Each structure stands twice: as C-alpha cells, then as structure tokens.
Figure 1 (cartoon, rainbow, N blue to C red):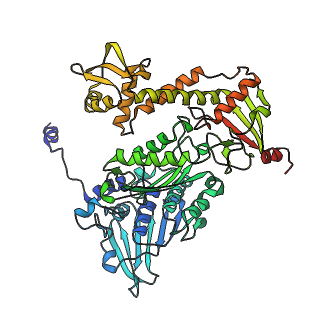
Figure 2: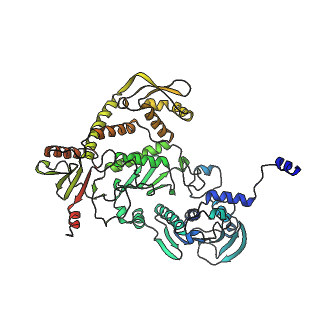
Figure 3: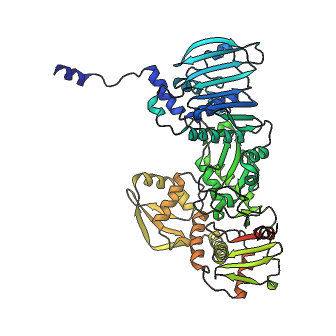
Length: 565
C-alpha cells in the first residue's frame, strides 16, 4: 500500500535523455529518405557545387551517398559539423531576417546522425589532403586523412535502424525512391547550371549536364511535349521578379504535382501564390483543375520568413496580398497575349495525364477568325449539340451550349461592370439578420471595412449577430448569408478579394441557365450567328466553367487518322 502511495506522489515531469531528445528532433526534420537527400543537396548547393552525384540503395533506407565538388570543409569543421545547431551560414540575429542560403538552422547533419550511421569526407581546394570522420550514435568513432578531390562526400547507412518503430511505417523501396526522384527533379529544375547524377541500386536513373538553360533543363526532365504547352512568363516590378513558364489550360491537372514554385531558388509551397495563379486563369479552367507552372520568384530576403517550417518547405511573405496581386496580374497578362485554342491530337502523341488528354494546343495562330466570310460556309449541326465548320487548314468543332454560355457570360459581365462603376446597390426592404460562430464573428468585425468597399452594408447587431442592409445589385437573389461566409473564408485564407470574383461566379450561373442547350435544333442562320459572336468574345476558348467551347482538328490530323501520312 505504501508503494502505491509513493508512486502516486512521485514527480510527473522528467528530463528526457539527450539521445531521445535528438531522435524526437530528427523526426521533425527527417521524415523519410527523401528528407535526407533534400538536406544534403541544400548543403551542397550552398557550398557552391557545380556537379552533384547521388547514389541510392534500397530506396535510401540502406544507403544514401552524395558527392559534390563544392567548397569542402577543413578538418576542424568535420569534427563539429554533425553537432546540433552548428552552421557556417549564420552568425548574427540580424542575418536571420535576410536569409539567402538554402540551409541555415544547423539541424540537418545532427538530425541525420541521430537516426543513421554517417561517414563524412571533405577537402578544400587549398588543402593537400582530405579528411574523414565516422559518426555513430552522434559520436565520432573514427578520424583519419583520406585522398580525394576537392568537395564533400557524405554516406548515410542503415537509416532509422535505431528507431524501428518509425522504420516499419515506410513503404516499399520503389516508392521511397520515387519520392527521392521527384525531389531531385524539382531541385534540378531550380538549378539548371548544376549537373546532377542519380542512381538507384547501381543503375543510372538521371543524368543532367551542368550549365543548361531553364528551357533545356525542362525539356530534359519533362520532355519536348510538355515544353510545347508552356507559355514563357517574365515580369519585374520594384518589389519582385518573376520568371518561368505557365502550362496552357489544356494540360491542367487534377492534382498540384505539376506546380513548381521556387522563391529565391528555394523549393517551397505557398498556398496564397498557388490560389492567386489559379484565380488568374479564371474561367479557362474548370473548378477542380489546377494550373501547371514552373515559376522562379526573386524577392528581397527581408520580406520573407523562411523559418516557418522544420523542413523549410513553406514560406511566408511580409505582405502576402501585395505579392499575390502582382503575381496574379503577371499571369493574366501572359494568358491574354497567347493563343489558347484547343486542338485534337493523335492518341500516340501525348502521354501526360490531364483533364483534357485529348485536347492540346497548336503553336500556330487560330485556324479561323471572325473576318472569315461565314456567309459562304456551310455549318453542320451534329446531334443537335455540336457545330462543324470547314476552315482553311482543317475543321472546327463548336459545342453550342458552351459557346453560347461564353457569349452570354461576357455580355452579362460587361453590363454588371457598367452598373458597378455607377455604384448600383440593392437595399433590402428589411435588413437581413444573421449569426456567426465566435471565431468567424471576430474576423467579420475586423473586415467590415473591406466588405463596405465591396458594396456590402453590414453592421454589428449585438453579440455574434450582424445585419445586412444593402448588397451589390447582382447579388439581390443570392443567399446573402452563404455569400458573406464565402467571402469571409477567402479573407481568412488571405486570397485576393474583389467583388468581381463573386460576381463572375453568379454571372456564370445566369449564363448557363440562359444559354442554348445541348439537343436544341438551330437553323443555319442561327448557327452562323452563334459562331460569329463566339469569334467576337475576348476569351472564346472555354465556357465560364472551363470546358472547351471549340476544338480544332487540323487537316494534318485528319490525314493521320486516315493513314494518308
């Protein structure tokens, strides 16, 4: 009985052992073998490497070896580089606010050493000989000189052997290597001047020469076919520089795995930027699709916080709204000056998975335009749904419903913009009262001025209740409570907010309900008038929901189908 009494009053807080602390810390940085490769690659690139060789065995769980031709380390550096919070990239507090290096935390080698066996070999250009240290359980167990070229080689073996509880959760070696390959591909895209060689189980998988241009690197990694559907983007302002490529709408994907964002050459995720780019595509994409892009953003380091994620995979801007607004404008400008007409293709000409795998873009100018004499052309109607027009270089197929949607959408939008310029608002005969959860209540109170700028008249009405007296006229038939929560949700996610975004969504519904339907018979005159009006729209490539409104089949493709070529 006394034993249980002492057990009950024993202290509950205890100091963890240094070994357990190291393993827990490693868990934040080293998620899987690809995390090790990422940390080692960033160190090599920070060291100025021009060529990097990576050898992987058993998906990285058995062995990871990386050799670079960077600056290298002295003997004294080798003896401390694996210790916690040791780095050559940071000295003062002030430097933390303008980070330019990829690595800076001083955690990488220490975290890796906590869950593996490590050998480090390194030599500087001025040293006659290199040095080697072997580290086991975060302690140096062997030191000796070694002959080697200038640079650094790090060998990691038996990853997670001392943490079997974590190792059992890893997938097959094939999947683990796939994560490594994806990582190396992304980093190689950001550093086209650096050569990369990657092998798995003694077999070469990737070999990229150094001193490539961004175009050459993309072609080499993703193929000429993907590259042919990319639009070059170049934008500079006093605050930032943005260069790279946008995928044309036809290769938009259901996932975000073809979105490559590099900020000051750091591979990162940033939700506001991703959302801004998708917003810029507007009705060129269906809501479930995500644009493809390869973008390199350069911005003053003091305007960034790169220290928000243990693996440095995310980043924050000092002024997110200002940055995303400029990015959105740059993407829109690029899309507006390019031809985005859909076209048919041969089944064996493209292997990429996308929502529109049978519809790609031609590099030429559109095969028809409104200046062509439609009066002399016969427009056929197929299944009372599709229109077929002969053109100079092939045939054009038009979806009559999608085409009419686009025409009406642009007409309705123009009318709304004219009304909005005159500040037309609808005042309710009786104010609408609604309540919000406490967390949303505070956000709405903080953004009442923003809603006022958008044309809403909202004011607190006691506790968690508000009343709405007026809204932009186009929203008078909408569910106002749902609309306000939708706008508020975007504000909470730091999206670019404009009334046009919500107006456009409403207008697209109106256009859809008012448009000619599939199955409606059109007279020859109605067909010609529809095609003519489609040619006069600003963006007649898709309906407002992102579906193709017109698709080209070139004479060349027809000849291939009938084996005339």
